[in-house]
Length: 517
Image (cartoon, rainbow, N blue to C red; front, side):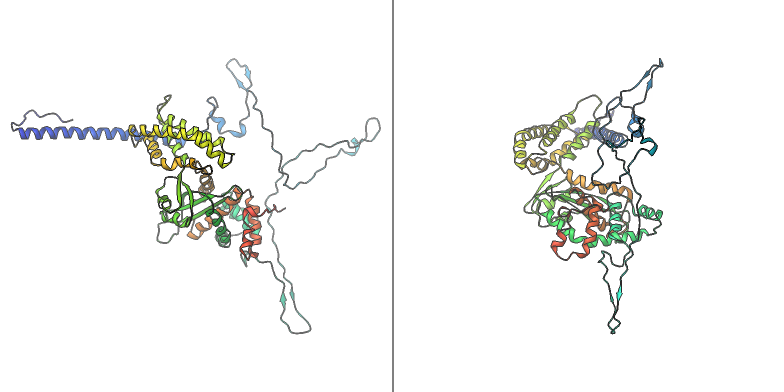
């Protein structure tokens, strides 16, 4: 800090200017010092949160404090083991009760294997022959490895010996991809393997090779793109159902596409998801775009009227300004930010983050209690129970916002809650409005998990096909369909569909395909 010079000028004007310069320098130094201190606190919080993300638990569920760390990873060997103390006395840990085993599905085919006594044991010691008085039955799961076979189509050609009429060839059933060796079952397995099980094409190529079938991944990729194009009519009908919903959940995540025109291979593109629909007609739709601009949700939800549930991404602002569109915000990100703020608090101390989390958790508890009630009853209970807690949380927020450092973890959580408050509290307006954006986050999770395996799409056509197939399989899953069975059913019948009614009949909630045996 600068000190006063020994020789002060006699001129009062110069002296005043010197004193002002000195005080301004000291003030600037103090501001720089405070800025550095704030920055250091911010960096320490970021380091602590980063360590927690890398080395900490991945969920907020509590683990018993005395649980050995290795037991968390050593699942197959987690049976209780005897412990020997210093006095060599064996102390056996209490045996954990095993849960009741679920019976195998009645839909699975069954092969009966009958076990009888050998002939020499059928004669009793008294000389009489033993007879069957009852049976004991047990079931064991059996898996037959993937069976690959060839369907050979033989088309008879007919001619007439009495005249020179041209020969006539018997028709072959219409195929989804004409002149392709892929049957509907192969295509259904290909789509399920990549988009449900997350297996990259090069691994599926290896699986086929082990069974003696050599199909390059370029061919597999081409089949996927062709399937997406043929399945587009179903996606159009699904979007019609989506736009009829009173609430649509929206989210987006990154996807890398290597060969986008006029773009660097390392640039990021986006996969958008919309989820909605009543319990018996739920819809999940994915859309690929190279941009995250606000015109994308405007295009995807063009002419929609209703509520949209999103995070706080500004790209949805233009959508919310459309006539008849009301925007809701998700409580989950707000809660997660306070959880982060709680993690950087001094150990053993209760802070402001705990106060906010207590109130937010009460709101979550009310929603859990109302999960299975009707919309009317949910609205009444929200007015009676949730509104007072929201008022209490808002009062605490107004008081706290001016008392926290904006760049700290707590400051970020408080400011996020404040900037989104008008959209966060709107769910109490009606019983059908959602509390958070979990349907969209659940819908997008399989894509995120699959992306970790296949990493990127090669071309925009491939990314578009991925969006199409993810839409179909995720919609099938939320409507209770087994994806492979439903896809095979659709791919077998799609070549014969001629009218809107034919396509409607193939939607997941309109058909009940049976697992092929």
